[in-house]
Structures are given as C-alpha cells and as structure tokens.
Image 1: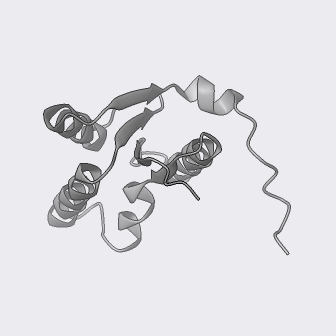
Image 2 (image 1 turned 180 degrees about the horizontal axis):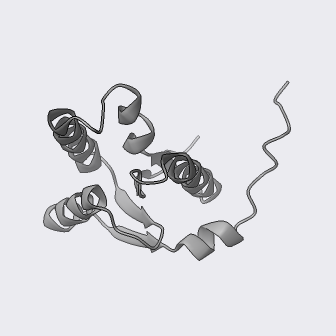
Length: 120
C-alpha cells in the first residue's frame, strides 16, 4: 500500500451543527474518494470539548492547529469561512502548507455512496 497524503479538512462547525457535521463527513468521504487520508478535527474535538466554553474552544483550535502542522495539505470545504477556519487558513499560509478550495457545489455534485447499505 502506498502512503497517501494527509489532508486536513476545514469546514464550518458552529451554527447548524447537525448539517455541518454531515457536510464534514461528506467532505471526508469525498477526500477518501480522491485517494487521500482526511483528518477533520472538528468531528473529534467537539466530542470531548465544549465549544461554548471559551477556554475549551481556544484549546480545540490550538490542538487543531497542531494537527494541521503535521498535514500535507489543507482543504477548505464549503462556501463560508468561519473564525476557526480562518485561523487554519492563516496558519497554513504561514507554514507553507498547500491549500485547496473545495466548493460546496463540488461536494454536493459528488455522488455520495448509499449510506443505507450496512457492511457485513
């Protein structure tokens, strides 16, 4: 097996959290279909940190930036740049990490595999 690029997935989280989480999952599925290894910290850290608590939100952003530093690329997914995403974009630019924009339309047009099929 060849090693694939590690890609940091940035997409909105706050606001309509349920829809945004589904969008982030779709972005990760899309990334897998492109032959890369996606990493979306905003699908992980909200499970253990409370975004409504400023210190925990700050800690989550800082941990995410640490993960970003280890990635080969940053993919900015969607048509809206949140505060957290802007911090990720700024850091990637500073560190020379390549950035790729994935528009929402591109993700929505991509055929997501049927999720109703269970793996046996």
